[in-house]
Amino acid sequence: MAIDYKKELESAAKSMILVHEPDTLIKMIVRMLVQKVKTKHAAILLHQQDMNSYILTVSRGALGLKVPKGFARMDSDNALIRFFREHNDRKLFNNAPVVYQEAKKFLAKRRIEAKTKRLIKGLLYQMEIFDALICIPSYFRDDLLGILLLGRKNNGKKFGRDELDFFVALTSDVAMAIRNAQLFRELELELERNKRLFIHTTIALAAAIDAKDHYTHGHTARVTGLSLEIAHRLMQKKKDLVDDKKFLEYLHIAALLHDIGKIGIPEAILNKNSSLDEQELKRIREHPSIGVAILEPIKELEEAILGVKYHHEKYDGSGYPEGLKGKQIPLIAAIISVADTFDAMTTTRPYRQGLSKEKAIEEIKRTSGQQLDPEVVSAFVELYQEGKI
Image (cartoon, rainbow, N blue to C red):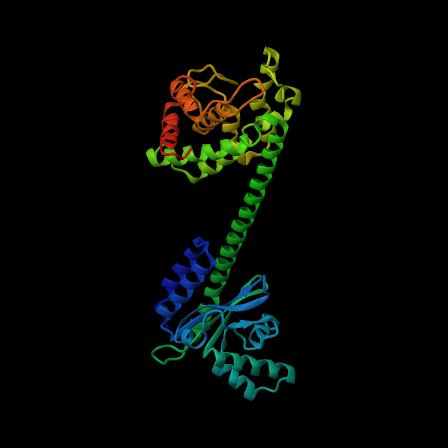
């Protein structure tokens, strides 16, 4: 007998590997089976590693009314789970799926040992609870990844042998797709944990930098906050200028670490209570290059390093370390430069009084197009006028 839904399900199974969200994938599989196979209900029991249990993750059709999602939780000693784990050689019924009526006949006609008999009775009892006509295991290598439960067909006909064989092949594709989605999700969570760890480490490094320079305590945090405010405003003003979430992440890291190179500058210079001489200025100007040397081995920070390296470049080309001019200066560095300049001007040092916000803003406007990027300055001034700085 030809299976009219076979090609559709095969095609869908091949595309499942592209779905990276496990819950979405499982819902799609169950919905597809109910619609194409035309069963009264379908459900999937899926292995949850953290609980070492099998959970009724998704059900569709009449079963959903009987057994609410999350209600069914089966541990490894449950008869349904034990059967497919202990008999995954698939010899007991000579086929992978367990058909309720066939299992009942097998139990009635065959002489089997008491232990196996109890196990099959327990299996049949579980199938009755779920009103399942067929149970199809899904294995990834030798591990039981899940169990597909199918109810009766809407037309009342039995499932043919060709259909059962097809389900065996289908669950192999489904197992690969589910495991792929789980691995992808696990990787995402691991990356997120690593990102949080990295940000916390970055903040700790920023605090270490601040601790070296007693006169600019809190400078890094202030520059980071201002830089992100400017970037958000630029995103509102010109979406083609800053339209990437990744840019904000790199900017956040770059702003936190823009002065990391000061770790390599003597504290006597950083904490000097008078103006710096030419030689001392030369040493201070080395800090962007020192910062790059510290961060360069971390390849993932390539974009953030641009902010560390070039935040002392000037729009007219008179800055350092490379004398970049105009739009040669990366935007990430141009943003940090404005925030850094403002904080430096409003911070009191032993040899000079810090400027008021009003005077600092006027000075920033005056140097727009000379020292500072005019587009960045425009966004910064708007923020000030709105009372956000």
